[in-house]
Image (tube, rainbow, N blue to C red; front, side, top):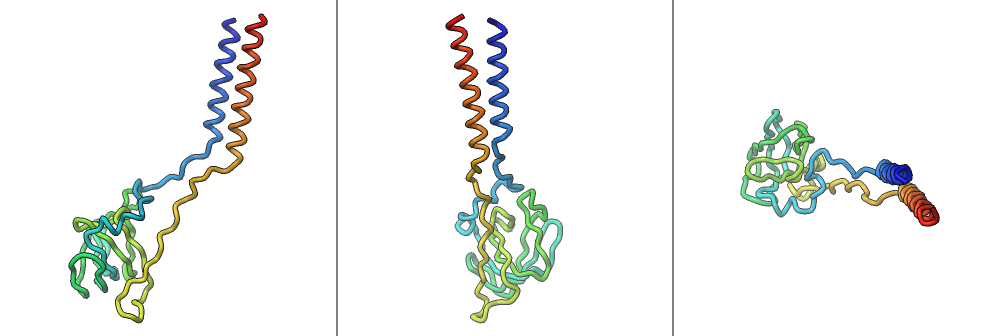
Length: 170
């Protein structure tokens, strides 16, 4: 009797382990806030479009071409604190490249909103060209792991039913 119970328990744990093993992993984000793209403009204190003139390990300088939010002069140089590591929600700016940059408290990063824009201002003046953020990875699971999980669940249910039947007749 104890051997049957131990066998059933081992099979149930094995079945559960197999379901977990074949389940797909959730998408991994190096920066935990990278999926919150819709709220960045509302949270930003300042939104500017400018060309990067200098990059250090802790800061970036931009020559401001246009201001979408906040007070800052066009043609001025804006200095912002930033990490260069995207793993820590920073951003690896490139000198000479134009960006649309959101900032909060004198700092910026992936969580605040940074988009590279076209290399030259539009013909209408310094109107920023918006580039849509890349879509997040699809969250819908593929069908193969659902089928495998269903088969393992059916196997476990069958083993439990067989054990109960033997227990009642024995």
